Amino acid sequence: MLTYNPNLKFKARSLRSNMTDAENMLWSRVRRKQIPGVQFYRQKPIGDYIVDFYAPQAKLVIELDGGQHFEPEQQRYDGRRALYLQKQGLAVLRFTNVEVLKNIEGVMEVIFREVRKEVGHF
Image (cartoon, rainbow, N blue to C red):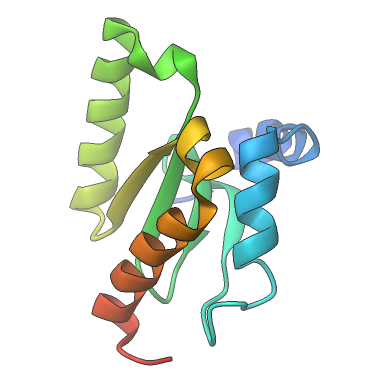
């Protein structure tokens, strides 16, 4: 069972209200079970982290990275975070904002493949 940190509730709500263009674009493609039978949540607290997108049935986290994620300190933090999520039994896919904005179809293909591994249908 994944842990939930109630202290992150308001921060997650704020992030949902202030999504980036890339987050909005991806959300428009995964919300409302557009991948059949797979519910995604946005800005979801898991442990001490807030992940960009989470699909519990597929055991999948999707993270979108802006320019700050290329800084060494941020890369170390992202690595620790990914390791924590993987230890919870979750797969983590990372895409840059530019990938989402310029190649949403390619991004969706990767997501479909990952979901198929776990869910096995659609």
